[in-house]
Amino acid sequence: MILDATRLALANLLSPEARSAFWKTLGLTLLILVGLWLALRESFVYYAWPWIEAFFPDFSADMAFWASWLTFVAAIFGSIGLALVLALLIAPITALIAGLFLDDVAKVIETRDYAGDAPGREMPLGQAMLGSVQFLGVVIVGNVVALLLLFVPGVNLVAFFLVNGYLLGREFFEFAAMRFRAPAEARLLREKYSSTVFMAGLVIALFLAIPIVNLLTPLFAASLMVHLHKMIARKDPGFSLAAG
Image (cartoon, rainbow, N blue to C red; front, side, top):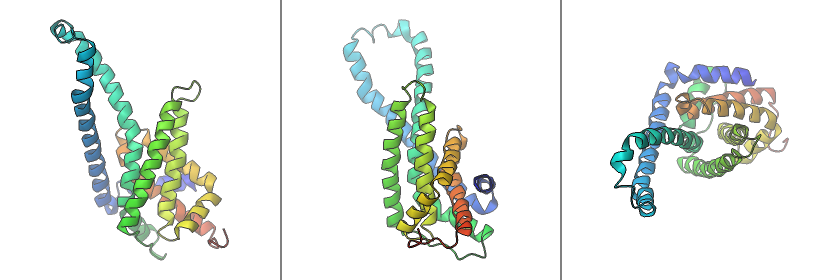
């Protein structure tokens, strides 16, 4: 089921029907990343640099002598630091964008691949935004924990995949399920198939870890979970809030 859903989600990324969602997702993700990068850079200039000069008063005077090697070292560490920061920010950004474009992605998939099924209901904009903000908070906390665990020997990047696999799998599946179910029923369905949803979340976390490609994580994750929910619904057609 997971392999089939992954294959279909990857095929959906560049399909003509999904082109509009593709460009909106990519454009908004890049816009947010650029804005955050500029904010971090300005924060360093206005806050961190005066603090460095205060503690090292001779630093500026010696700048000409140290400029050549300092620029080289700063470029290396700056690039590594920026890459790590942006990698950690991709997951929260994905959470924020998810609520805005999930319905667009779901419509494309349902119309093209499940034309015989009843269409899903769009989430009201307020509910979608509230869900995205709540999800954003959870993902930020989860990734802070994962970042701290990176310094624990034997854990390292495993924490990143486990935390994001669980969080992204849980929230994207419930987003997809709530197009057809009440929130409580969507949550119970996710709990019933928790292992399957978690494994699908790990696929999303792996996609998230691929540089450049991970800019399309919201589109891929939404597609994957729409397909997965459809497959589970067909496997378990009698599931309901009462049955769960």
